[in-house]
Picture 1: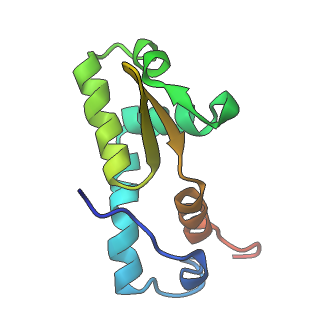
Picture 2: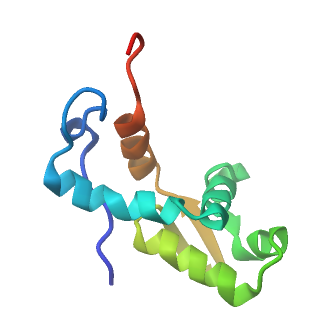
Length: 115
């Protein structure tokens, strides 16, 4: 199983405030890399904004002009980066965002007013 980002928000002030520690950069960079693909960014948006906090892969796949295996690859990448959790229920898999990592990424990118 791949390493998931688990850096504490308190350890990582905004990039505009001070240098990011090496360990934090190494832990968070897979999440940024995963979100660097337009399809994965759209998938992440759909998952994070899903009503009830989760969405079935059966609702994600038809939203794209891509094959099921390609969507599965992108979802695996999001999981490996620690951005989403998945739960199999029968034949379907349901995805939900991991809010803590999203908050970490947002805090890192926040630029204080007046900069």
